[in-house]
Amino acid sequence: MRYLLRRFGHAVFLLVGVSLLAFTFTTLAPGNYFDEMRLNPQIAPETIAALRTQYELDRPLPIRYAHWVSSVLHGDMGFSFAYNSPVLPLLWVRARNTLLLTITAMLLAWGIALPLGIWSAEHLGRLPDRLLSLGTAALMVIPDLALALGFLVIAVKSGRFPTGGMVSLHFESLAFPGKLGDLFLHMALPITALVLSVLPLLLRHVRAALAEVLDAPFLLAAEGHGISRRTLLYRYALPAAANPLISLFGFSIGTLLSGSLLVEVVMSWPGLGPFLLEAILARDLYVVIGGVLLSTLFLIGGNFLADLLLYWADPRIRTEASV
Amino acid sequence: MKVSDNDKDMQPLVRVENLMKSYANRKITGQCEEVRAVDGVSFTIFPGATLAVVGESGSGKSTLALCLACLEKPTSGNIQFEGADISKLAEKERRTIRRKIQLIFQDPASSFNPRWSVLEIVAEPLALQGSLSRDEIRLRALALLEQVGLSPEMERRLPAELSGGQRQRLAIARALALEPSVLILDEALSALDCSTQAQIANLLVDLQSARDMTYLFISHDLAMAAHLADEIAVMNHGRIVEQGPPDKILKQPQTEITRELLAAVPRMTFARPEAQ
Ligand SMILES: Nc1ncnc2c1ncn2[C@@H]1O[C@H](COP(=O)(O)OP(=O)(O)OP(=O)(O)O)[C@@H](O)[C@H]1O
Ligand SMILES: [Mg+2]
Image: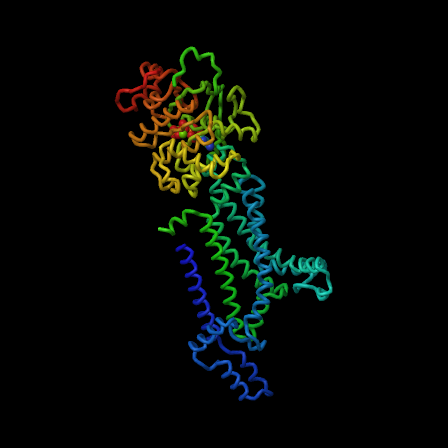
C-alpha cells in the first residue's frame, strides 16, 4: 500500500508542478488575448482596460495562480476569453473525442503488438521474424506527421474515407448502427495512423522482453510439467516479461496522446489538438493551461495505471514495498 | 533399494538404446560445427532402482537428462519408457510423458518462477492435474512441503528468500507433486555443503522407499553416487565408458576417467548402507 500511496503522492506533486510551470510560461510569453483587440479602432481603450482588470491580467502572478487554483477546485479551470465560458466544460467535450481516439488506438496497438511480438520472439532469427523486424525498422523512421499526411492523401485520393471531422453532416438522421458505422469510417484513418506510429516501438519491446525470458530455466521446468506451448507463452513467459512492458504501457499513453494531438490537427478530428492549437494562436490563456494540465492528467493517469498493474503483477514489488 | 538377482527378469522401466544428441554450434566464422553432446548411450533402469551417471563437466550428463525428460528431442536412438518408445512421439503425447519423468534441474534456483511463492510453486503442478479444488491443492502442497522437510511457515516466501538446501527441497517437492515414476536429479547435491548434502541424500533414500521411486542420479561426485546408487555409469565425451555396481567401480576402476574421478573424491570411508 505504501508503494501506491507514494506513487499517488508523486502524481499530485507532478500535477502541481506542471500547473505552476504552465502558468508561469504562458503568462511570461509575450502578448495576450486583448492585444489584438487594441488594434481594433471600434473598441475603446477603456473597455480593454476594464476587461483586463476583470480577468485580473494586471494582478501579480501568485494571486492569479491562487485564484485559478480555486477555480480549478470549483470545476471551472479558469475562464476562456474566446468562448466567454468556463474552461473545463469546453475542454471536456474535446478531451472525450481525444480519449476515444487514443484509447481505441492503444487497445488496437497492444492487441496487435502482444501476439505478434510473442510470435516473433518464439521464431527469433528465422525468416518471418527478420522480415517483421525489417518492417518495424522501416516504420520507425517514418515521422508521425508524414504518416498522418500520407493517410490524409489516401483519404482524398480514394474518396472512400471522409477527410476530416468525427461524424458526417447527416449523422443525426442515421439510425443507431448507421451512426456507429459513420463514426467508424471517420475514425479509421486517424486510428490507423496512430496505431502505426506506436506499433513498431511496442512490437520491438514485446519481442525483446519475451526473447529474454524465453530461455529462462523456469520455463523449461514448467514445460517439464507437461504444459502446452501456448499456455507456457501466455501464462508463464508473458507475466515474467511484463515489468518492462507495463512501464512501456504507461509511456505509450504519452506517445499516443501527443501523436493524437498531431493527427487530430492534420485530419481535423474535433479533439484537444485543434482546440489547443486555436487557443494558443489566440492566446486564450486559461484554455492553454487547462489543455496542458488535462493532457498531463491523462499522462499521469496512464502511468499510475501502469504502476497499479505493476503492483498487481509482481509480488516482489509488493513485498519490497511492505517492509 | 537394491535390485536383487531374482528380480532380473522384471521389465525395465527405462531402456535407452544408442541415444545420440548433437547440437549445431555456429562458430564466429559462420560455419556450423556439430557437437555430439550424447554419443550412443545405452542403459536400462529397473523400477525402484537408482542408476547414477557420473562424469566430468561437459561429458553430456545434462543433455542426457533433458532427452530422458522429453525436453530435448534426441537426434537418433530410442528411449523406451514403460515398454513404449517415447523419443519419437508427437508433442501432445510427450506432454503426458513429461509428467511421469520429472527432472530436477542442475540449478534449482533458476528453475523457479522468481515471482511465485513457495506454496504457488508447489501448487502449480498440482493445479495442472485439473481435478483438485483449491483447498485440496493447498493441503496437498503443504503436505508435500512437510514431506521434504520445509516448514509450512515458508509457504509465503519467494525462492530468492530460501537457502540453497531449502531450494533443493522445494525442487524435490515440486517434482513429487506430479507423482512421477522416474525422478532425474541433475547434480542435485553438488551446490550444497556436506551436511546439507547428507540431509538431502537421506531425504532421497527415504522418499524412494516410501514412494517406490526410480532415480537417475547425475553427479560428478563418485562417492555420493556410490552411496545412493545400485549401479554407476561413467560418462566421458558423450559415451558411457564404464558401467557396473558401485563396489566394483570403486575397487577396480577400469578406465583412466574413473580413476581421475576417484582421485577427486575426498579421502573417507564410504559408509554404504548394506543391501537388505
Ligand atoms: N543447447 C546446446 N547447444 C549447443 N551445445 C550444447 C547445448 N547443450 C549442451 N551443449 C554441449 O554439449 C556438451 C555436453 O553438455 P552437458 O550440459 O550435457 O554437459 P554436463 O555433463 O551436464 O556438464 P556439467 O557437469 O558441467 O553440467 C557440452 O560440450 C556443451 O557445450
Ligand atoms: Mg550438467
